[in-house]
Image 1 (cartoon, rainbow, N blue to C red):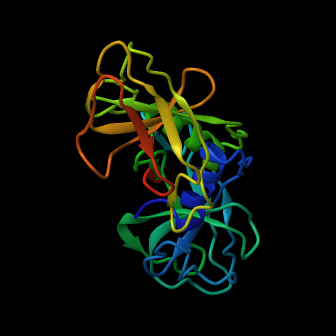
Image 2 (tube, rainbow, N blue to C red):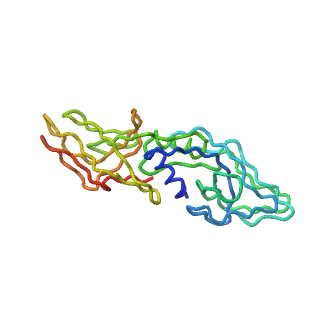
Image 3 (tube, rainbow, N blue to C red):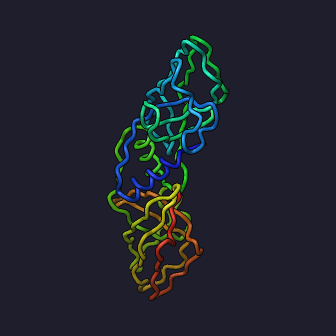
Length: 251
């Protein structure tokens, strides 16, 4: 499993649409795969409630719980078998489901028993089109209550895969990043909402463009993705333009 639909949409809104994101996480137990919406949580009864969980500083877009977490004890009756962890943004039933994953082994709690999550039992990792900066920033916002909101974004062009840090960006011949705007996310996917027009290539050609990138107003690479038409050759005197909906970012 991975991050929920809510988390993926919230990530796009925070990194591309200037919508602040900062969540305090609470761990949960599930009797079946919670999927992307937090299904099959253990009923709040017999001593079960969600537990506050602390995630460590991210590295490479991943983070694990530390210290350990203890649920229970189960009383006055035991709990059904559970096999999945979950994370939510509130302790009470309801709220927004953030993330879920299978346990290494399913567990059952008899009367008086606890179910414990050892250090690093919950390890969450950001994937998708996000770069290293964005992945770490999202872990901090989704799991470490650190506010994230990128005020504006710039679009870049690349002659090869930008990877996680914005490699292979074009340079020279009047090339410059351009301002981008993004539509409301749908199941973790967004696209540009306006025509993106780059300067005319002069006095030399730009060559083949295979990918685009997204940056904040500074120098932080946010995301990258292959163009839908690859490669796009930009010769001397030509202008690269990208219609509405032609640049897609997937969380």
